[in-house]
Image (tube, rainbow, N blue to C red; front, side):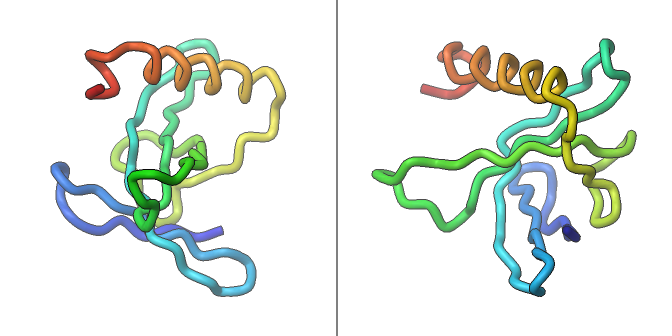
Length: 100
């Protein structure tokens, strides 16, 4: 999986490229750092999703600094996934954070 960041901080997008070379544009939902795992994480959703469609959020860890093409890493640990899911649920439940 490769990635490319487009735009500035106001309109951050990443193009993910799968193993078959297919490209899909994603919007960055948010990033955060976990002290427990000493890693940074990025949560993404497809840019082409309509207002009435369900959104599938993708999550990756990334190397310190800005999210760049070579920095995304798949999350492999179940405990790490549970932590990321908890942060996402907190984000979605808090109107101040999610912009509801």
